[in-house]
Length: 219
Image (cartoon, rainbow, N blue to C red):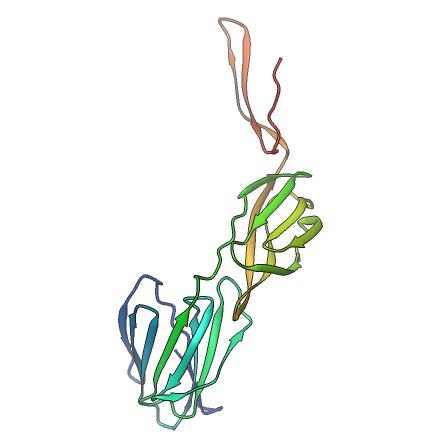
């Protein structure tokens, strides 16, 4: 809940868990009630601000298509805005107080990204994005080499420095566009994860962790 009376606007960005079907939040100046029935979400806004304010509601997308949006029973415009992590739509209303917003969804759930958590340096990295199309990649930490997008897949070679790294894939699915983070830890292709000496036998024991996509052959 972000009131901005200098601009005459009330911004509400609900951060409710997706499994919740109802919630009610109140502060001394602003409150709202949320309900969900199937594919329909409703937001009832209460504003007790000292000045009139318009409403800017940003809601996380529950499905890949918007069947319709109304404010106080009247058809309202909406847009998908740039967001990271999950797709978000924005709805405007001239008056925040007593605004009743209804969103009707249809289609599939927004896609989730399947990406390996650990990749060996110089090894292939493949991220699969379900029903979403990968249209662009941004790599501010230079963790990807030879990156390419094909339909719902991103393929690259793990590069750069070792450690936890994040790149971003721009996903498109029906009415939605958003940026999905690709969080990966880059490690050496092979690591000794444990070692020890059995002094009575004079043997050295160690465990090798294989961070590649190829099996190791022992001898």
